Amino acid sequence: MSVGVGESKANVSAARRAESVERSGVLFTVVRDVRVLLIALWLGGAVFFSAAVAPAAFSVLRSRNVVYANEAAGTIVTRVLSVINTGGLIIALLLLAGALLFRKSVARRAFFVETVSLTLMAVMTAVGQWVIAARMLALRAAMVKPIDDVPVDDPLKISFNSLHGYSVAALGVAIIAAAVALLVIVRRGQRL
Image 1 (tube, helix red, strand yellow):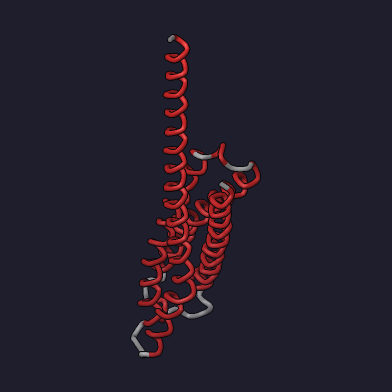
Image 2 (tube, one colour):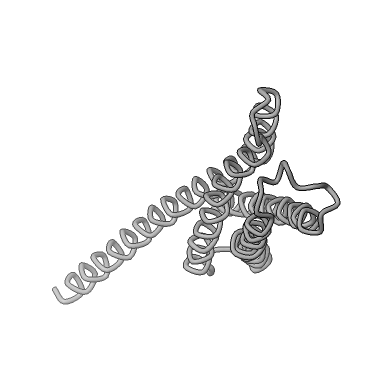
């Protein structure tokens, strides 16, 4: 009789472990899918902004001969870029937390590549927003007049244009880092 009770307890214990493993597998799948969705949405938004929104804002306003077209387009682009950068930072930090949470379920190299990519994405979006964009806004304010009226050889405009190049580069690096992280996250899910 005692053997039957021992076997029964062992069966119950094994069933609980199996149920726990199944639940953790479901949790892992849900978290992974949410992580893929978040980074894919940000990546799509950032690429769309870079390839369509920013160029279109300048092109359309200039083609309509809008007074101070560059000033207006720049204001639109600055606002949208703020959303892209802030969202990128938040998403990168959330995904880093998720990577740390499931760290034991992935190969070391994949974990390293994912965390470095997400860290790079976080740093680039933060620098893009709170360093580069902040300096660009300060330069625009220091120009006193709309950027369309500032001569090309003005030192403030030269600095502004230089920072614009850094802004484009920072977002480009963040996009590449996000793409690498996305590939690692997706591949991680395929190996399970």
